[in-house]
Image 1 (tube, rainbow, N blue to C red):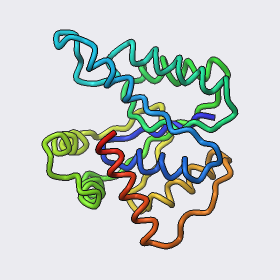
Image 2 (image 1 turned 90 degrees about the horizontal axis):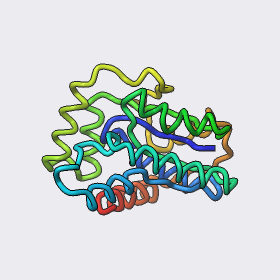
Image 3 (image 1 turned 180 degrees about the horizontal axis):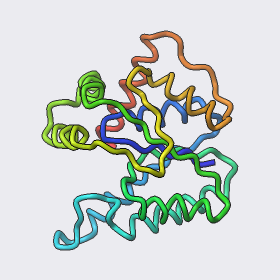
Image 4 (image 1 turned 120 degrees about the horizontal axis):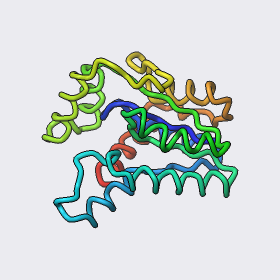
Length: 196
């Protein structure tokens, strides 16, 4: 099974994905944005796009790699990545489903205020990139029509992971109940995400 986590910048996709990976035996955390960074690094400036998902190669390569992993292993694959256009969704997720691969796709949503609070807690609210994306979140009034929506405004990372695992009928290990340890795990996720 592939569990695809969609949603706006800062909503907590990576933190939830890391929590799921830690608690699902043998789960794989797959990073589609690594392909985007490769394209950005290799293509001349004149061919570069502002958004990874606009590269046809990004969509095809991620589809092919996910298909290979899903058909060659029995492991749960967790994919934290925004897809905003139906066409792009159809190319990747639709293609995988047409190949007989189970893909559970969720869009995590929260208000801009909640997202700003989460970013502040992660120490990531003062750079231009973050602020520009927060502005985009504030301007977004619709979520993709192809998504299962999960309102995360009143939920912790652990609660979101528990809900997703239940909806996907995936067995999950118990969460870390010590709030200090859980905070350290989430802090470590934030640090890794910043330098990934």
